[in-house]
Length: 140
Image (cartoon, rainbow, N blue to C red; front, side, top):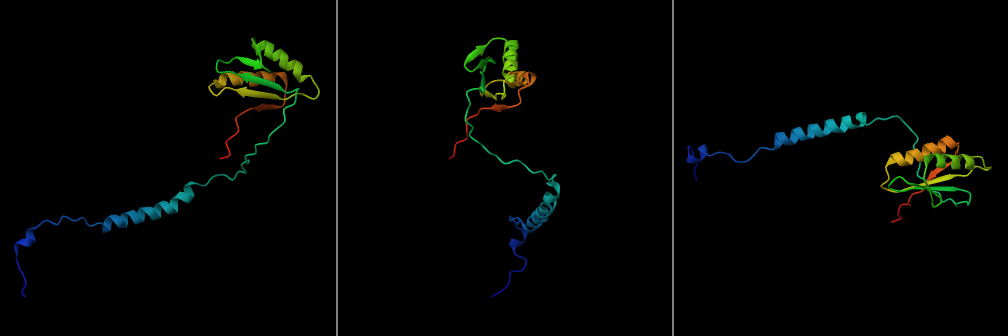
């Protein structure tokens, strides 16, 4: 048994990486992020509404307005050519007691501009109850 002193192994390059400093830095960064994230995420306390999807029975006096992808408006399946005609019909309907509800069905590809015009006319006519008809989410 003997010792090798001054052997040719001294000049060899060490090819392994010392990961201890890297782990130390990563742990420090993790602690910093865990401390600072709750401070950054603080928001104003607001009571958010819960989703409630109530099925409502359609009454015969309700007005169903449909807006297709080209922006054409249909009043209970009848095409309304002019915006002024739609406004006049809505004003006549707003005089009824009780006031009918307006249900708007918009095509998925309809530009918001067309829906907004219909809502504006409903508002100008003085109708208080406006609803949007959508496809209910699947229960799966």
